[in-house]
Image (cartoon, rainbow, N blue to C red; front, side):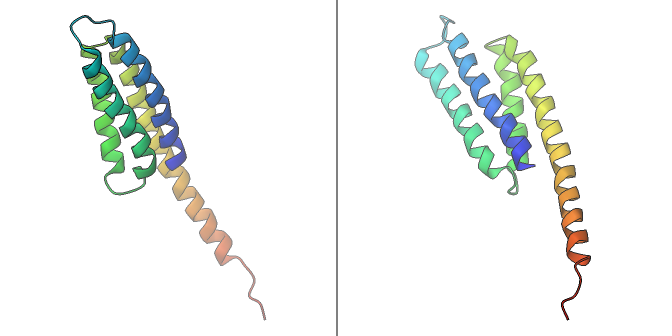
Amino acid sequence: MRTLCSSTLIGEFFVIGFAGLVAMKDPDLSMTTVWTVSGIAMFLCVVLCGLVTRPGGVVLGWALQLALIASGFVVPSMFFLGAIFAALWWASVHYGRKVDEAKARFAAQAGSSTPDAA
């Protein structure tokens, strides 16, 4: 699960950075505000790569997905991109857990089928 979720988060890191560049063109927003919010979100993406397998990591990932969708109120294309990344996040969590379960089953089967050394 970690690999799939981390890949999604790194993709989001870059999308958030590019959205920050687009948001800078809004005359109602200060550059400080744009880069503070974008920087925090980008930092969270990197931190979550390490926390995704810990308790609450997936929940924090969902919170980031909701924030990404909500950023569409500032950069309208983020409604679409946020929804795409929320779908990718769901797939990463769902299929990542299935892969982890399959690996555990395979390891258990390989461990039980080893011949005893006599």
